Image 1 (tube, rainbow, N blue to C red):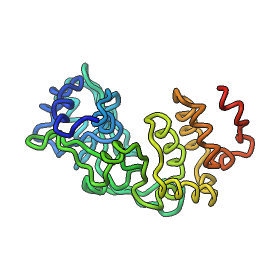
Image 2 (image 1 turned 90 degrees about the horizontal axis):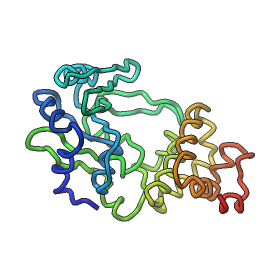
Image 3 (image 1 turned 45 degrees about the horizontal axis):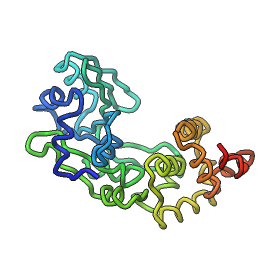
Image 4 (image 1 turned 45 degrees about the vertical axis):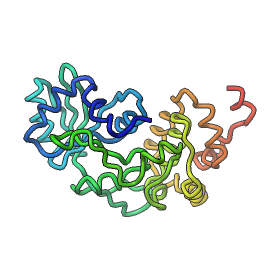
Length: 252
């Protein structure tokens, strides 16, 4: 596991990052978030760059595209932007909070500080951020203990109702278990089984379930993921016909 003190150097070595850091000067505070942070602290290569800004992501995206000599594609519905330049591509989103009016529904979102943005995320290992500004460059924000959980090999939800808020997190938990060699902690697995028992997946649109399932089945260790779904009863929760033959899964 990479020590937090090495993060500044690791961030600077990312392709195109020196130019991006220079372009961020004078703009609202920006943070590297999501899987890239998880990969950097593990010492793995960060492929997809996601940035969160405490400001209007679309206007920041336009400014960065101009400074980098690239283009910004704005996604008005989500208030996000994708910036492409010669040596770097990244997604930008405004730091925000999410409120779920009912289980499985898409949340209402509001601009919010970084701490609220990290609290809305699925698991502690994905709820970390690295500052990309000035004297704070490389500082790791980890309010929910994502780094210790990575070191312990644990997938942990941030709050007990997480799987009910967004039941697709059930599939995501299994995917992270198999991809990263992690395991749900006791409380998280208990919450997962309870959500399955409450038929939480039935509250989610078929398109969202399909997308998450395709991501899971695209993993290198997909057979292990399918077996783990069976252990949790998640396969039958999606559709009774998905209950696989254990011997077939083991031989895959």
